[in-house]
Length: 581
Image (cartoon, rainbow, N blue to C red):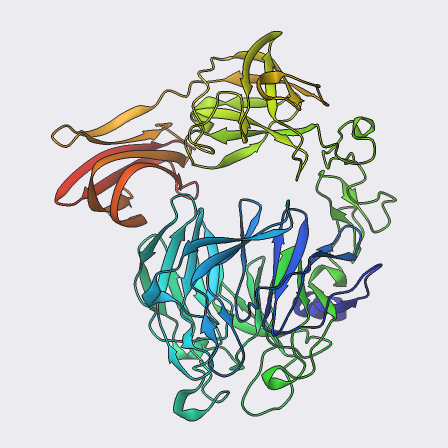
C-alpha cells in the first residue's frame, strides 16, 4: 500500500551537480536543445548555462546577457527561441521587439524576425507544435497593466506571424503546456489589476484546440485546486504537473505540486518540492521533470541555484534494467545506462558525438577540417528529416523528395568546400555552406536529389579550398538503401492565376508535405476534414505569396479518406487525401 501511494504521488529529489553549478536567478527559462538543458535569462545580468544530464555537470556557454526576463523559451530545430519576453526592471518592464535566438552549436545569440508591434508582451506562455511556435496571453506593461488574451503563431520556416482566436480570459505569469494537439493554460494572474501585483490569480483551465482554432474552458469543478502565479509546468505521461509558484497570501513561494490528468480531466496532489520556488520553468527528460533556480520568496527575493528532479518511477516502477525503483535510463544511443547497469551514459558516442562512430578519427575532439555527420533534409525549406546512419533504409514514399547535407565540425571556419562521391564517382562539390549533395539556392533552400531505388555509398570529404581544392580533411562514408518513389502528386491547380498546391506522398500514413505556389498575394486558409466533416487541421496565412513547403502531421487519425480545402482570396480548391496506416 505504501509503495502504491508513493507511485501515485511521486518524489522530488534535490540534485547536487558533479561539477559546476547554476547561477542563482529567477524569472528565467529552462529548455532542452539536443542532449543538454539550457538555463537562460532572469533578472539582471545572467549568462547562458548548460546542464548535461548524462554527466550531471554545468558549464557556462555564453557570458553575455540580453537582459531577458519573464519568458518561456522553446526549442526548434536545435536552437532556442525566445518569442516573447521583457527587459528592464519592475514594474514597467518593456516587451522585446524581436525574437531572440540562441544557437548551442555556436554558443551565440542572434536577433530573429520582428514581433508585430501590436502583439508584443512578456510573461506569456509559449509552446512548439507541428513546427510552429504559439504565444498565448501575457501582459504588455510589466507588472502594471495590459494583461491580454492574445494567441499568436509564428512559423520559423517562413518567418511569418498569424493572429489566432483569443483565449477566454487574460492571464500572465504562467507556463503553457501542449498535449495531444491542445494547448493548456493553467495558473497565472492579472498582474497590477486593481493596483495589486499578486492577488488576482486565475482559477479556470482554458484549452485551445489547434486543429479547429477553438477555445474551451473546463467546468469550475475542474479549476486548479491551488491558485498561483509563476509556477513551473510540464507534461509527464498523461499528467500536467504544476509546481511551485506564488500567491498574494504568503511571502514565501509555494512548494505544492498538483497534477492534472488529461485523460480523466481530474486533479490530484502529488509530492511537494523540497524548496518552494517561482519564476522558472521545467524540462521533461527520461520520464523525469527537472526544475532549477527561481525565487524562494514572492516577488523575486531569495534567488535559488538548486535543481530538483521529479519522478513517479522512483517508488517501485521498474527501470529499463528491470530494477523496481531503479534509476537506469535509455541514453542518446538507445542503451540502458546508469543505475546498476555498469554502463556509462552516452559512452558509445565518439569524440564527435556520433553514436557507435569511430572516435579515433577525431583525435579527441572534432577537427576543424572534418565532416562529422550526414543529415537527410526535405527539399525547399521544410526542415530536417533526421540523421543518415550506416545501413539505414530511406523510404521515399514516406519522406517525399530529399537531399543530403554534410555537417562539419561546429564553429569551423577552415572548411571551404565539400566533395560528394556517390558509388565511386564524384557527384557534386559544394563551396558554400550548408553543404548539400544536390545543392541549395538560396542557402538553406535545398534542391531535390533525383534518386531512384537502390543501394548507395556516399563519401563526403571537406577541403580547405573552394571547389574541392587544397588539403582534404577527415571524410565520412555511409552506405544506405533507398526504396519507394518520391513522385509528387498534383492535387489541385488554378490555371487562371497559375496558383497550385501539391501534396506528397498521397496515399500516406498521415504525415505528408503540402507544397504551394502563390503568384498573387492573398489571405490563405487550409482546412482538413475527416469523413464526418469535422475539422482536424487548420492553418491561416495573411497576405501570402511565393513558395511554401508545409509539413502536415495527421498520424493520430485512422485510415480513411480525408478532404483538404484551400481558400485563397475568393478561390476555393478541394481534394481528397488517403491515409493508410
